[in-house]
Length: 397
Image 1: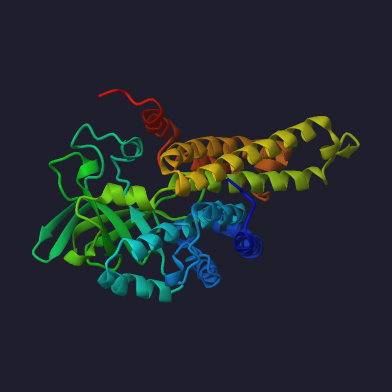
Image 2 (image 1 turned 45 degrees about the horizontal axis):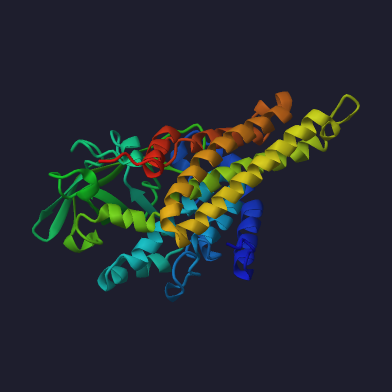
């Protein structure tokens, strides 16, 4: 595998880096400090990113995108998240859900949903899977009981599906144009064999966002709780085959875990860059602290950890497209290792700042909060390792 960047990858990287540094980073701390997270969604920045092509570059070229592969997504996502992990996390959603709209839909569905989505730079997407009782069960794949996994129900009533249930930790449930919702369509079998996806416009009667969750970090990335109360959608809003939801997610969600790792990589890199800049100006013991051996060694270790995790993430991203069976394992490794690395590196950056690091006036404390929050995305590390162990060491049935 050759990780030399193509001209197009370098172009997208430069666009994302410039936008993150010039537009996203200056706003990130302001948005992070807003008391009410429901007011922190940067609609103007999202619109600007869309106009730059950063919302749709994953789409195939015939739909106006760049047909970007997973590695290209990772390259762009690292730059965005070095500007702000919350914003990068939000913008990455349309990459997956937009691709599902383009490739997993019928011609009629593309006319109804994809066409207006492409024409509207404000159109945000959301993915509704996690429920209050089913988070780590989903991540680990536990399905030994019928009560495990998503319980939101979808029942066919004439020419409509009726959805009832609750979703939690759902990105952009308050600002999305539509949500792709995983619901139980056959409650008589374990969830992995009885779930389907539905396209649910968020202005549908019976769809209600009841809160935007107040988090330690990633505050401008709105995680929401959504309820479906006799939410009626046309029968044609079924996305993909009936009871084929898990296969659909496996196909279009491939690479999702390694993207979580790269988001953390952005936080680590941002903290590292701030620590280096501070160390070059802060004087103690008669010289700049970057001239002290202890600080130099700490920075060297931080740089090495970042580079090692980037290499793992890039290899995982490449494997997701070229060796899916290997990609399943590597992306989980990349997620757990990189998120844990970022938590460590951001704290090290905080220590280099000394007492100044914990002050809100300095940027590094935010990177720590963002990195720690990333430990709990797409399932906690223990649940992900449990699923990874099943792949590496399958128990004979």
